[in-house]
Every structure is written in structure tokens, then in C-alpha cells.
Image (cartoon, rainbow, N blue to C red; front, top):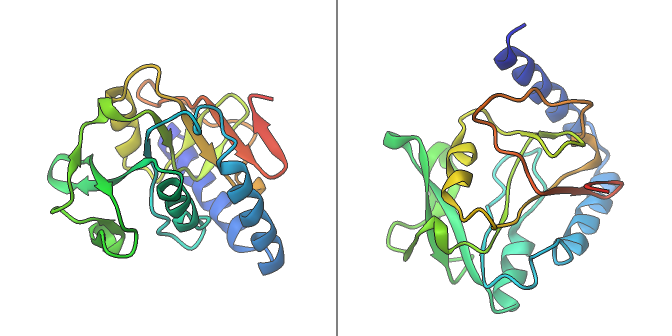
Length: 193
């Protein structure tokens, strides 16, 4: 199998595991992820944070994290897909209920009328993913948006992910364009330990 095929198979396997979680276990893990969010290294010191809106049934709910960042006085930034260039543009969010509109694939994205934010102004980022390993590697959705965005951030910008326990795999195949994370936290596991 090619690396692309292995990644596709891992995505399918992990999504199936997440969707098979019981509602009680999912709620327990969601609550643990929300508690862990504010304790991730570098987050509390960061003034401008890049978060994302959960959009798929297998993702944990990020809206409470967006609200928490605003309540903590942080400048909240979220991505919007620029389809013609297959990259992400970043926009400031002041009101999570009013500052989004359906974008690519119907996913909520910042309105184009929101203030644009340059990547080098980001102090900390929460990176989405489907599968993770204990070397700090991830598999995203396959479009490469974050792998193109992360090199545009300052080199010292912490890059973290939160995940359900079901999202860990033995090893993520790595390609030259794949961007590693500084850390990954799930309710029962952590990288680095």
C-alpha cells in the first residue's frame, strides 16, 4: 500500500472507533478534554490563539473552548478554507454565535467580513486531526491545509492537539510535508509524557 492508502485506511479505522463510542464514554472524554484544554503548555501565556470549529460527527466539541478563550481575554482566531488556493486564511472571532457562516462543505467558518489575522501573529495553536501517534505525528483530513499553514507560523508557536483515546494509533506514516506537533493530550494518554 502507498502512504496515501495507509493514511486513508487509518482515517477510516479511527473514525469508526470514535463513532462506536458509547454516549456516556464520549461525554466523559469530552469533559476531560475541556478540562485539559487550559492546562496545555503555552496556552495560558498566549495572547492570540488559533482554534477551530468542530465540524464532523467524530470530532469533540470545540465551541466551549472558543468561548473559554474569549472569556480569558484572548484574541481568538479561526481558519477559513480558501478553496482556490487550497490553504487556510485566519480571521479574528469576537462572537462565536455571530462571527461564523457555512463555508466549504457547509462547515462553519469565519465570515469574510471579520478582521484577517496574519499567521505570524499566532501565539499558540490547537491543531485538528483524525489519528495520532506517540512521536507527535498526526493524520488530518487529507487536504493538507494545516501542513501548509503550520510552517507559516513563528517557529516558537506551540502546536498542540486534543484527542479522544480512540484516536491513538501505533504509528502514523510520515511524509516530507507532514508537520509534527509539540504535544497531544487525550483523557488517558499524552505525548510527550
